[in-house]
Image (cartoon, rainbow, N blue to C red):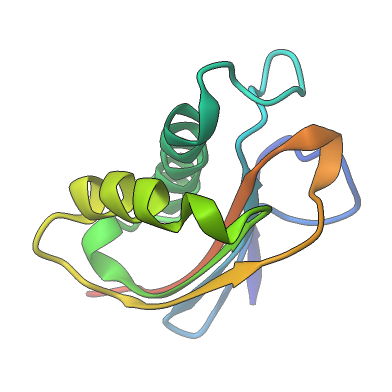
Length: 122
């Protein structure tokens, strides 16, 4: 087992690799420079969270096509269509298993957080 390095704010690793599986910690829509959600609403926030997810994947030696499962936490079920639109553009033809879970709130006022599981391929 090994950690994927990065600079998280809390006591965790951006991802852990165990065997051929990469477990990616939650990636919010917070701008890494400010710690606050990016402006522009749920679509802009979804793009930021997906870009951060992709960075962690790359640092682990993966691509988004190796993601097998995503959990998407959103603060309003009303945002489902917008999130799904951006998410489908990001993944294209690749369709990992997914759960979208409406929750009360996220850190620093973010509207979305993503976590994922990916498989390393030789």
